[in-house]
Image (cartoon, rainbow, N blue to C red; front, side):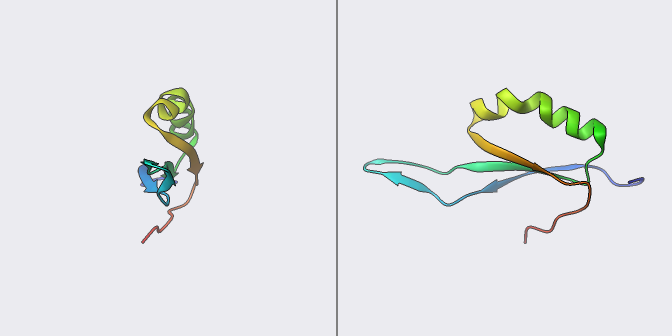
Length: 66
């Protein structure tokens, strides 16, 4: 997609609770992606998990999250 820059966004999911423990899981959303952007996100894989991401979604078109 010429003229479009890939966007990496974070989408927070509903908070999880277990007794006194709680956390807010999140996923990475990469839209307007080309092959190079997808490869960069794949390279982020283990680092993303270490940051707490529970997954990633990749789209070649623009996705509206609002």
